[in-house]
Length: 131
Length: 407
Image 1 (cartoon, rainbow over the protein chains, first blue to last red):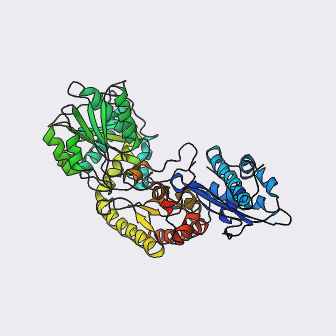
Image 2 (image 1 turned 180 degrees about the vertical axis):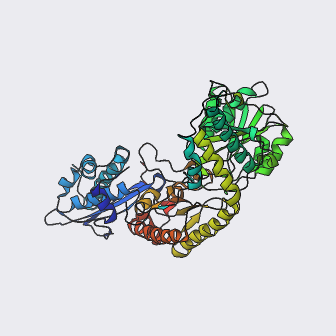
Image 3 (image 1 turned 60 degrees about the vertical axis):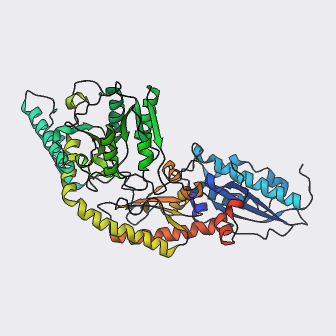
């Protein structure tokens, strides 16, 4: 199975690896997946309170190359978006961008879940009801 | 591909064909084109002579009569012929077969077919070291048991089963003993008659011979064992396996057996030193490294190692432009299941997902092992830097207490 150049680039040089301070109210954390399933994704966003824009995003992922590339790409896309715009990110856009093979589509689903989970965490911390 | 030479450490998947075997095969594609079953002209006689010679070479390696070798297309076919063939041939005696959960799919799926045909199959657990529990094995034998099929050495872990003790149990209870010896033949001494093995499946391409040719050893005397053919036609191979013989393949198989007989002890001694060096270096360089399966009863060229909190398939991507190994993790939507062999050893799913299988071979060099140690240690560190569960582990969080969102 040959992977796309974009996928390999994200795998070899992942963007935004790291950890944000989850005790801050401006930070939302999503932890999805399970070690038994072979992938765990932790994705974090930091929201600028004045503008409502995502000013930083970080991830760490335990998983295959597609899972790592999907989360790296997701953090790239999140930065500069509003929370509502971020919620609109669809896993199929990740599939297309990285040319994920059919057996790896679940990696993109996991990334979408991680985004939604991080946003839900941010909103619940700040008393914002989901729409 | 990388600019450097690719390092091949996946010899349990297949071995490169030894150039000496290739050379032996070449005349049989064009100069000597006969069908070994053509009885009435020199082309046929020459082909038959070459097949007989190869049969001798293989018989010598196993210390059996050459007439006891039934050629097949490979070990999968030999496993199928042995299991289904015994089931059909001995149906009047009984319908029960005993095997292990850690067998190769060729054995397990042939056993499943036997169940569909009205047979009963017991799939025994193994102990944490991957070996059969002899007491459980004996307890599983009933008066309907006709066959015990237990592999000589496991393809994923290299763990060697107590063949002698199993043979004694079979003798005691009057049960046929079959072994899938695919990973053992040509690498360590495999003399079935000394151990009471009645049927033994193996293949050329795991012992530096060509792909597409294998064999089933079928004991001819005391007891005289027969199997019902699964491939019908011209009645080749004493009626047990019809089909024109793959003459070039068989010649290469024979040559590979002859080479193995001379060189396998020296190969094994050299490879076990390299394998141990590899294992020790990972343990020295990295934390949380686990060797899977019995260390004591193990093939000399195999190491199955878990690098905790790193997913195997992802780890492989850090070096697979340069090094070829196998992973116990299959991360696909079709199967998120990690290796059933490692699970049977009692490894948690997380450790099974973190495993790599290294299988060295005749053409592996020490320089390649040194390079492998360097690249894979680097890869493990890269993946751990990316791993949230490694970070949690380092922070002292009890990972078993975390509520994961399984998907």
